[in-house]
Image 1 (tube, rainbow, N blue to C red):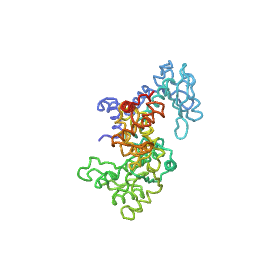
Image 2: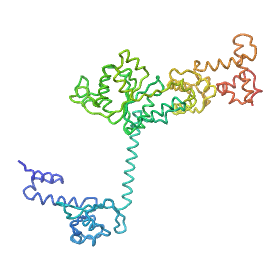
Image 3: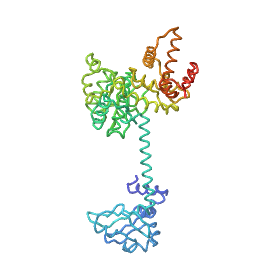
Image 4: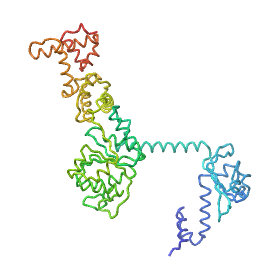
Amino acid sequence: MITNSKKTEYLALNSIGEDPEKHSNSMDSKNYLLKLYRFIFDNIYNWMVVVDKDGYILMINKNYCEFIGIKQEEAIGKHVTEVIENTRMHIVVKTGHKEIGDVQEIKGNQMIADRIPIYQEGEIVGAVGTVIFKNLVEFDVYVKNILKMEKQLEFYKKELKKALGSEYTFENIVGTSERLMESKILARKVAGTKSNILLLGESGTGKELFAHAIHNASPRAEYPLIKINCGAIPSELLESELFGYEEGAFTGAKKGGKPGKFELANKSTIFLDEIGDLPLNMQVKILRVIQEREIERIGAVKSQKVDVRIIAATNKNLEEMIENKEFREDLYYRLNVINIRIPPLRERTGDIPLLTHHLIKKLSSELNCHVTEVSGAAIEALSKYNWPGNIRELANVLERAINLIEKEATVMLEHLPYHIRKEVLQEGSVNIVTKNKLSGSLKDIFEDIEKRAIEQYLKETEGNKYQTAKLLGISRTNLYEKIKKYQLEMLIK
């Protein structure tokens, strides 16, 4: 049986690639270990010196001696002040205070050294000194490498947030209407707390954007926002998605198990979208997470603590659902600690021009198109529409318009769907029709109205084709064709 001391010797011998059987009977393990320590001491990258309590050198490694220009055997036994320039080792053994990161000049080089006193049974018996940077250039390189790694870490953190869709902040919530500003102010105010938040609003109003902004303004922002749509996952899979499972918990379970969304959101925030679609059996489990601050994987024998903030969102009337026994009242009050209502677009029509230009810029970049403007007529039509689909519908309409644009870089009235522009067209037709009596076939009437409209705007703009096209909500190419058709060339510049 190998003794512990013999095992230590074997490990030490193996560590430098020698045969343990060859040395076990011929070398005392303590002597060998002493040689091993001396080998490490002499060949370590940092320069080192050890002094006794009076400041005399006990040990100094070869690399240090080579730099100073003295042999090891000559340095050992001498007082440290005779060997090392500007040393403070003899002071450290007197004061007993360690000195970390001190700048010391040796042979014209600015070095950074550590000096640490050595205690035995409460008394100072010496000190060890280490030159950790041999010059300030080396230190500067080290600092730059650290800063570079910190930047890389920050970059990867940001990329992870983007990959998980949590890069948005309050600056990304566009609009200045009173209703929206009330919601933003409240959201900013509660972002720094741990309280659960319930976001209420119609589909497409930007509930998820608010969730991102609240999370990124919170102390939990360094961790990614974890999202789950409660209405998009089949009820039989929802429990494993939320709480995870252990290996072998059911047929098809992954080897090693799988963490659930709540586990992934530990120390972070979980966004439960469409909370109104959560089945009643899952509502009970969510309630337990909130009350006990713990979760249990499927197939697990014990639960685990989690620190999770919940932001829930719904477009449903939860109070009605409670009356109909479709949503638990106790869960509602646990989630509804802070209630933020996000207004629909029809209640903030003053924000439509701002939103339109913001979305045009964003969509143009995504679609690799050069679209910079929206005509006045198009903005008017967008502002008068009711927007049952809210901002999501607005974005879809603008994306369609960008795809219809040919040469011009402006979204015109004609690029919008008829159900959006019809009100503006009807108003324009009434204004022109009421000026003169109409006659002829329906085709003749339409052409007469079109001609009068073009003529009127050309006169108002003093023949400016660009402004006229903008007022009419058509492209300049289309305007040129109509001017030629109605022989109105004399009115243009």
